[in-house]
Length: 333
Image (cartoon, rainbow, N blue to C red; front, side, top):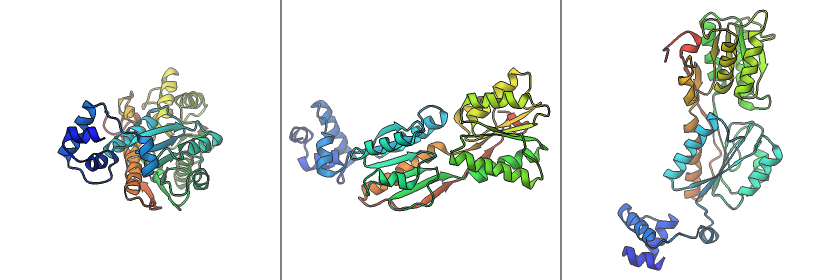
């Protein structure tokens, strides 16, 4: 560090502030220090810094899975915001196991300055029981209940999104609307199913035989599409709890000679980037997936930089209906 200071023509204290982010350093001075460090092949010892400053400059992320467009987009938002605040990410997957999520939480202790946890089954009490009391944590969705202690909660308005989709399908004249539900234990899936049932009941329509259990994968959507296509009285529309299952359903329907949307309309939820490029382009409920990750990082970094507990506040991000050609209405693109 003394060599870097001499090379950059600044004090050792300025070099320390630059690498520890412990005080103001002008942008030109920061660049000069970083060039000097690169020329001298100097790498700050983060382990030693963390022992002294109790900072690792790392944020932890625990998600149920690393596969799929939703998690890819979520991680993109997390990573983009983390880099803007000069943090690295440490990512772990719980694979849907309660024991694995507890192990993942414990493994993060002492290694991260803040933590983002997304798991449909995790509770606030589980998180608090497996982490240090002052570590700021943001829960994404799940059955977390009201924000409490040092935990913040970020979620999406599933009920409004699913309700808007159902009103759209009903408004197009559909009366036999099927629903491909997500994993039974998943809070978001339960909220979307509840909104589907409420809309059908309000319209005086039955749902018997029209709800198919899926698991958010393309394969389960394909199985649902194949099943629904084989019914004696098939539905005229299918609302899948996510876009991956909607894509699987479209593939199964097409394989059985049914046209979307001429024979059967299909809609999804999440509006993943691929949705607009399906054939036909998929009507979906837009979820600000990347923004969800970015907002979580913003809340964590604010708490870390202020060296203060995270404000235990619950936020719900809005959803938006996006109408495309898969339901026979709207912009064909």
